[in-house]
Image (cartoon, rainbow over all chains, first blue to last red; front, side, top):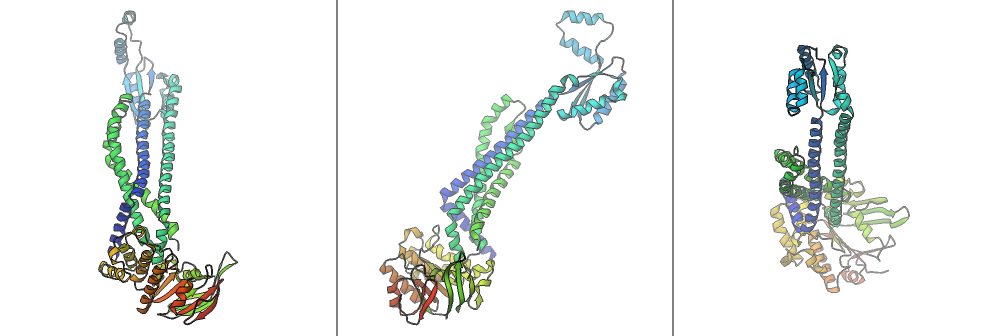
Amino acid sequence: MFKTNLIRILKTGFQNFWRNSWLSIATISVIFLTLSVITALVLLNVVSQSVVANLQNKVDISAYFHTQTPEDDILDLRKHLVDLPEVEAVNYISREDALESFREKHDDNEILMQSIAELNDNPLQASLNIKSHTASQYQGIVSFLEKDEYKSMVDKINYHQNKEVIERVSSLAANIGTGGIAASLILALMAIFVTFNTIRLTMYNWKDEISVMRLVGAGNWYIRGPFLVEGVIYGLLAALASLIISYPLLYLVSPKITSFLPEVDLLYFFEANIWQIIALLIIVGVALGCISSAIAIRRYLRA
Amino acid sequence: MIHFDSVSKIYNGNCAALEDINLRIKAKEFISLAGPSGAGKSTLLKLLICEEKPTQGKVFLDKQNLSLVKPKDLPAIRRKIGMVFQDFRLLANRTIYENVAFAMEVVGGTNDEIKQDVPQVLDVVGLADKAEYFPNHLSGGEKQRVAIARALIHRPSVILADEPTGNLDLLNTWDIVKLLLKINELGTTIILATHNREVINNLGRRVITLDKGKLIRDEEKGRYIL
């Protein structure tokens, strides 16, 4: 009997969907819009995160050492720095490297080149170029370098000159992160709310039929079942529509965004995560259709 | 079979729809429930299908106290009863065949039983050739015959008809009444609520008359007297 009922519920669900095609199209459109908003928000977060990561990547600090500091001490300090969890990379630039790059940089400035040649000694300092995972971690690294045991080696750290810029980047990154998530949540909630209300109105349309079914003696699950089936169909078709529309759209738009922001490749992100995106759209779509129907029908099923 | 034991139904604390109703209805009877609009006829029927609960007293169907029925057992009670309404209450989205089959599906009829019984019942009500029509393609009389077919299909022990001829012309009215009489002859108890004097007087069956919520007359072979 369970199997027969299940088949009947599925059949009625499909039948209702088909016979009320206009209502079905309207509901699918609303879920489709919601899913599109969610896809757009995911992609927008990808863009903002790439921009922030790129910005943070450009920030680093350099510690310059007194010229008489032995190279081994500096390399030793480098090892300690690399062990710190907040440090992503430490690049050692010896005094010779520094002189070499200085020469390359000022190749065409003869006066500068001559004065360098006249000096017997290399005036440039060895340095460690330090990159952290996020901009906010530089303060901790600087404190580490300012400890007593290293104080005598370190001449200056350019953090203090760049502090303001680093802090601005750091707070911008944090703001974009939390702001993006908050805005996404609010927009997603609004879209979900609109969908829920659309389905509630659809269900209002069915309230007389539901009361008739109850009077004929249908059990609650027998009444509810087809509506849930319909909800699932809405969700699946809306997810499909959303995928079909967003892929070619990204194909067209993504190169334009990449020409603006070279570090952002939305099409690549979309293709690389296609299964996760499909799963997200289907889960959200089906859940929206199904749960909204279940909640909306509840009031008409009370005995 | 049906027993109303000192039943009152009071809405909003002071509006009495039914007052102290004592009534016994035997199996296979044909009862006319007479009275003007607002007399309490529909309320009485609603108590039987558990759409309402009595404020006082008890209602029994087959010795089962309906006041004590839990919400999850309501469908089982309603399957014992066939209901026909003035406004037909068909499922607009389903064909005539599907409307009738639905009542069988909910009582757990198999596909074979449905395929066998639904055409038979549609034949009884004279709509075999309109099985694939939708309700909005039918006239009022035809819709009511579908409603009767639906009320009949799962072989209920009692059919409650609430003003079934209220929206019909004279010819269709008699068609419906004759159909109900035929069903009664086959052994189903019928309770027909109506304010149609002519119908009641011509039936010559038991008449229970309600007025302002009170049972004022209960006569075998009665007439519509107010």
